[in-house]
Length: 484
Image (cartoon, rainbow, N blue to C red; front, side):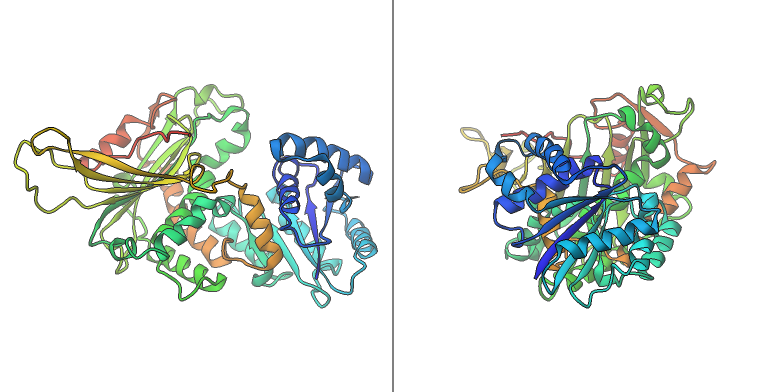
């Protein structure tokens, strides 16, 4: 079956920086279905060749050494442009006519990619339905929706209801680019393809799990968006909870989209909701010094740029094991990592002179130093019985046959074309995630909100976050990855 990818918001940054380079690299690797067409739609007016030339320059920039002019010329033969305004129904009729003119096969599948402002999602979907562009009698019709999917539970539910009047749930692909990262997908293989990990992946052996998404950069010119969002909406509701679900889920009967997402949703159902004093005891919030001086930030803004949460999954596997979730701007380094902190040994054999080890750790580096490290105790050579922490370090980049890590959008775009929704969020998943985060946001806006702690950029957040962990007799894994 032939395929057409229709990108709304085609003149935007995401299209030129991520989507077109990803599609070009898929084409170069012979992974884009033969005869696939790409149609850009936005209000700007371009001729086909004019848009292709513009994309050639940006793709060469973002694809880097992988760019090849001859390959691009063959790829761009099937790249087209159609001017259109999402608010104009006539433009959708014209789009339908244009698609019919280039889709000469009897059956052609289509993926509509909404790379627009989130405020336009509902209108775009309504217009697609009204123009008859969702009829899948002659080929599949799917829609990819970028995050943010709503700004709270109420808006997410409204958006879901609106979309479901036009598309079936199996046609909807809510994208979170974190799930397209090779190292996130590798968590499935790490857990379910190895007999050495799964037997100890539970409350009997694990003391706590830490998920950190840290960014060196500060807000800069994003204050207009960020000050109304904050770190919980920006990072926790989507990226971090997705990482938590994959880490905590039960093994599905087989690797099937419906079964994988069923198990992920069960994790969210098991998360213990906070109430009363939980918001003060189980959360820490901070704001980097200098945030109030960023352009566009209100003088007395209480928007957090750092957050740490302690969540519990009340199920048989994880009962009593805290999940520490942390994210911040202006941090010590850029890193996304999952730390499985195993319990200490029940008895130290080697006497008082030997320090008590911190326990074994499994560290999954999601980015940028993609890999896995196992921390364990070994004897210090040429000494009495003293131990030290040693590390087994696996790097994807240095592995035999290792290649540069593909951009997440390559995998996700390919999955949308082949109909594999395993790495996309389902409607109930999105709503359950908002149901966890919304009460925390509301508590932080209330008169009883916990203190907003300042911190210097370049650190691991406010010192109070470390003190909070120490009171629980635990510590953060504050180690910047070494890039090879």
